[in-house]
Length: 124
Image 1: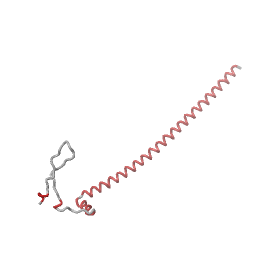
Image 2: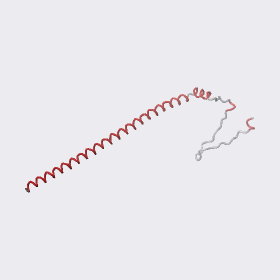
Image 3: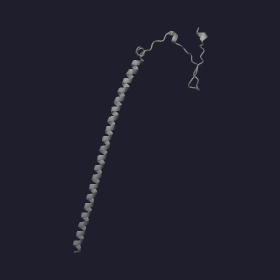
Image 4: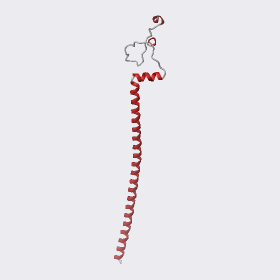
């Protein structure tokens, strides 16, 4: 009888060990599945962000191209003059022009002042 008890005890231990192993296997399987789902969710979120950034890059490229065209158009003297005229500006007359000779650059200041040597008497 002692042998039968030993065999039964062994079988019960094997069954318990089998159940424990099955539970551990199922737990590992679920953890792996959750990790896989989390990874897929993260990849989906990153793909969305990537598409948004690509769309923004495309839009910024188009904006840069439009601005380059506008700069090129306004850089041409004829176009610039036509635009100024549309804004109501006129070409100044020779009496309206004034040439000022600035002194040499002074290293220690960023703003410079020029003495006004033009007086009412010298204009007449």
